[in-house]
Amino acid sequence: MRSSFRWIDRAGKLLLAVALVPLSASAPAAPLPRKLPPVEQCGGDPSFTAFRQKLTRAVLSKDRAGLLRLIAADATAGFGGEQGPAAVGKIIDDAGDEYWMELQQVIRLGCARSGAARVIPSLVVQSDAWAQTPDADYLMVVLPGSRLRKTPEHGGPAIATLAWNVVKIIPGNDFQTEVVLRDGRKGWLMDSELAGPMGQRFYIEKRGGKWMVTALVAGD
Image (cartoon, rainbow, N blue to C red; front, side, top):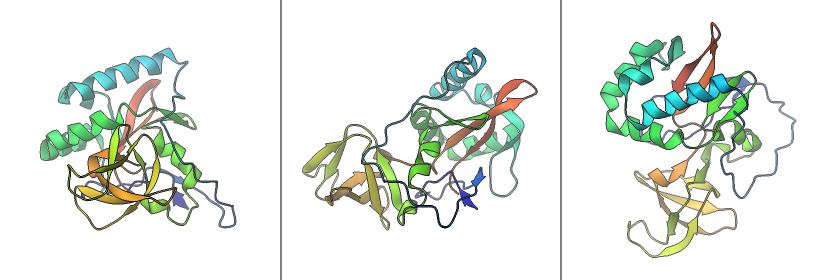
């Protein structure tokens, strides 16, 4: 069994495996894409569209109470059995603006279906395409407009401007990350310019006929 929700937790944030998908050990690895932009697979259901609008408004306005109203009572919030709105509220209180910034980033990154569930960002589901690759744990996507730099310095000379490129990260740095592009070029990016399927993510399902967030987690 292997987690379908993958992301390198580079900041020591809350970790949790949300769902496990059986993978055959003999299954061939899918070709690794050069780019992986978000997808939108969650249209066609007015009730979900309305829920998603409420969720997006709560996140973008940092509406703590509004967000917690959308969290299911049994929603997964942590590795240690933390569940429900109270657990998510504690995380918000402890992490503050950094947590909100992460949620505000991912809420804009598409929505994909996983069975009857909806997952935001869509990369959580899309990353199954690379789950069997040898470097799966080190693969991430570069957010649009990010400048690949020759040196770690923030104002260093740019090699390229990237958008949704799949890159391999080289671990061992904080706030700035050395990466390798598919064409072999190396350079540096800020951590905030990278997205991956094991960061903060919303797992949304129906509870008693109503859409609710059933997991709000990061990590594996």
